[in-house]
Image (cartoon, rainbow, N blue to C red; front, side, top):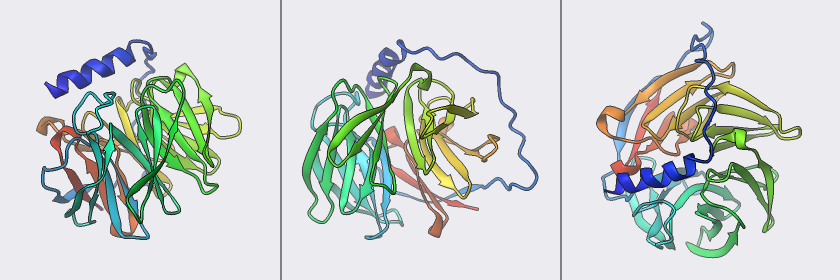
Amino acid sequence: MRTNILFAAIVLMAAACQPTKKKEESVSVPEKITVPTLTKVWETDSTLQTPESIIYDESRGVLYVSNINAVPPTAKDNDGYISIISTEGEIIEREWVTEISAPKGMGILDSSLFVTNIDEIIEIDIPSGVIIARYPIEGAAFLNDISVTKEAEIYISDTGTNTIHVLNNGDVRTWLNDTTLVGPNGLLHQGSHLMVASYFGDEFSRIDINTKMTEVLSDSIPGGDGIVAFGEHYFVSNWNGEVHFVDNFGNRTLILDTKAEGLNAADICYLPEKNLLLVPTFFGNTVAGYEVK
């Protein structure tokens, strides 16, 4: 039943933005680029509740997981929460911060954890585990991912309105509103550009920060969700249960497929020092850790 409700909510949002399909891209990979492989090394127990996103707190050596809990993910039901888990998959504190409706993407800035919550951004003081501020975004429908810059700007995707916002020092501004974004979900800020994964289209794109010109790197990743850097290249997850390796030239290789197991692949996290890719399984109610080789 939960799955049906979630899909109903997604279909309603998708109806307003039907993407134009591009031709299938070449998936050939230059010989000099070695495509990584994934091997599962651990998985949490299934006491998490619809885990959507995961982020590493380097200064504390732990992972935070956002749990939507009951769906649809647009319901202001106040039953979502943030968990703390170890890098070995142990659940340290299942309900660390509560009183959130549908937490999704997260970003860390100084001692604060910023979390999207439908139509607002929540700021959590990490040392105390207390919500210290809420930043409502007028007109927002489905705030999703977050990416924090070195300049302390927080980029936020709104999948429901084809919009990307920026939060800076408590002020929110719309950075880009463009129907060609086709439901922006995953974000990754990289200095001069912003990487964006489309949920309702198939596009994984690079947007120039200054000109806002868009270059499509791959047009074959439907249901795009999370993006992490892998050296000069990328891992991109899609909610359907896949993780793709996309090199900096736009060549794409499928390296994980859990659709047959009925598991999703939501907003991923990569720990380069541990060669570990972390995948929230959403309706699977776990986080899986994969060694990257």
